[in-house]
Amino acid sequence: MNHHVWQRWLGKITRFASRILMICGLLILLWVGVNWFRLQQAATGSIDAFLVLGGGIQREIYAAQVAKANPTIPILISQGSADPCIWMMFQLRQASMDQVWLEKCARSTFDNFFFSIPTLQRWQVRKVKLITSVSHTPRAVWMAQILLGSHGIWVEPEIIPDLTPPGNKEEDWKTAIDLARSLGWAVLSQFSSPECDEIIPLTQVNFPDWQEMGFRCERRSSEITEIKKLL
Image: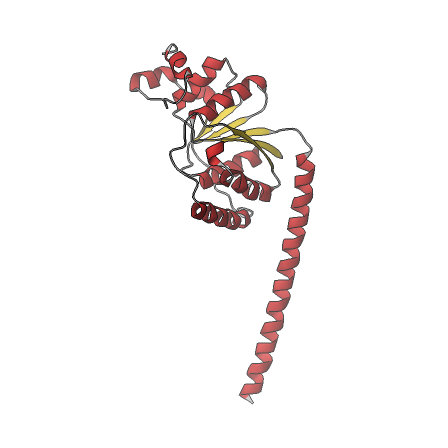
C-alpha cells in the first residue's frame, strides 16, 4: 500500500515539475523573442552612448576624438588610464568633457560590462558603440553582445589598432570562462545588477591636486611629448 502511495506522489511531483519546466521554457522563449525584437529596433537607431574599455591609452586618445566630434553623446570610460592622463588627452584634443564619465570599479573585462550595465540603463541607452583595440577581440565584443544584448542594448564595435604589441595573449580557455560567466550573468542581472560607487565626471578631475601628488601616464604614444607641455 505504501509503495502505491509513494508511486502516486512521485507521479504528481514529476508532472508538477514537468509543468514548471515547460512554463519556464516558454517564459525564456518569450523573453528571447521580445529581446531580439528590441535589439533589431535598436540596431537601426542612432548611437546613444560610447563605452570605452580600459587597457590602453590609445583608446582614450580615440575617445577624445570621439568626444570632439560628438560633444552631446555620453561617454563612459571603464577603468581606463589614471584620471589626469585622460584629462590631459581631452585637453590636448580640445575635446568637450561635459559628457564624459570615468568608472573606477572594474578590474577585468567582465567587470567592464558588469559595472557598465546599470549606468547605461540609467542613461536609457539602446545602442552603444564599444571602443576597444585589436588585442581585446573577439572576446570583449562577444561578452558585450551577450551581457549588453541581454538588456536590449545593441552593440556596435569600434576596433582600433594597438600602438604596441599587446602584453598578453587572448587565451582560448580564458575566453571560454569569460563567455560562460557572461551567459550566467546575462540571466542573473535581469533581477539584480550592482552599481559602481566610483563613477566621476571627467570635469571633476582636479588636475592641480594630481600635479602635487604626482602621477605617471602610459608611455605608448608619441603624443605624450605634447601632453608634457600641459604640465
